[in-house]
Image 1: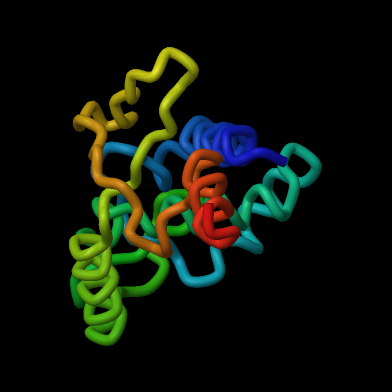
Image 2: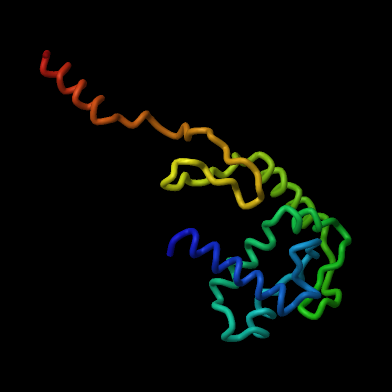
Length: 155
C-alpha cells in the first residue's frame, strides 16, 4: 500500500471516529482519551473498521501536537460516551512534553516534487523546504562515471 493510500485510510478512520463519537474525538481541541479506548471503539464499531486501521488512526490522533498539549496532569480522560474515565498522571504529562519537544526538533518533512518540477506546499499550508538530504555520498551521473573510466584507462 502506498503512503498516500495509507494516509487516506488513516484520515478516513479518524473522520469516522469524529463523526460517530463527537463527544470524545475532535480535531479542534482534542481531549485526553480513556486508557484502553481501542477495545471500546473496536467493540462499538465492529465490522465498520479494520483493527489495523483503528490502531493507526488512534496512533495518529494521539501523536498530534494538539492532543499532546491537552495531556496535563489532573486533566480528565474521556470515554466513548464523553464521560470522565480517569485522569492524566504527571508521568503521562512528562511523556507528552517529551514527545512535543521531539516534534519541535524533528526536521521538516519535504514534499515530493511532482512531474511539473515545482514543489507542492504541505497540507498545513507551510512552504516546502528546499533542503537536500545529507544522508550519503553524492550520486554519480553518467558523465561522472565515463570520466572516471577514462582516468582509470589513462586516456
